[in-house]
Image (cartoon, rainbow, N blue to C red; front, side, top):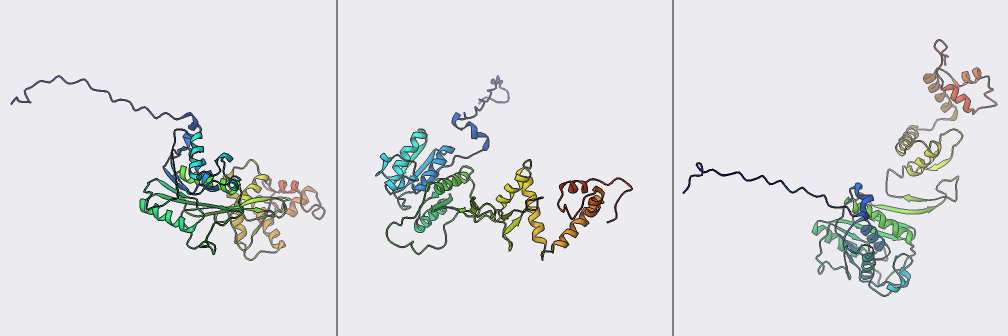
Length: 357
């Protein structure tokens, strides 16, 4: 046997590793590539008004592995919220929706199935999105999701409201066990918004930690504008900053408008006064004003507020309100609210001329 220690071997030429070629970004997704979105596999149960818009948002966002379950047929009265042609009336909703989506993304793997049955359909996916209107079916989907370790999301819409939740409700309505199909008023708006909200969570591969229930409220949300409508987020504590006082009086000079204590509305109104402020700056100012308002217990009388304001101005600028009016030669009784006086108060007092408040 040759001795390996006495043998001479010419070293082989080092082989340069093949450089990894980054996966080409399809031109259709170039605008969203930097957002770091995910493309998980999804099981969608329910292809009605909410399910079809959810499927559309997911497929447009890049999901290319989608299985759709629905055993119902497309009817003519579905078309007020389904983006399907009238020629598809009578087809299974899952089949019609899959065929339409394939025209938008021909290379996507989209499967159409009938009614979802966990004993028959053992399909695994990263997400299960349930868009049915039955508590029983949602509970079935949730148990299936838990068994396979997938993420779960359920959506709903009726009337002017849409909902999104990471778990099924713990109770049912009186009509839940009633036989037959129950028809409720619905239009395309809540369906589209529920589908778009679901796409946010799935494309970011992020489970919601709370349920969302969003309703369209027709005025008066802001009492001074009775024709204004607004989306009211009923389940997000940060947005609905409500205490015993449900309305907020704008403290800006000459405004005083009464606004519902909804953080979104307050931030929008604040930026009307200060358009150069960022959302972060406006939010910080609104939250500070709300905190100060909540800290005042009980509410002081107007003269106490005025006295406190004058003391703070004297400490900050060395000049009282009465002193400023006197220096400017303006009658305080005739002009109780004068922006020139306010600006003058905030000017620094020259050294040696501090006024004793």
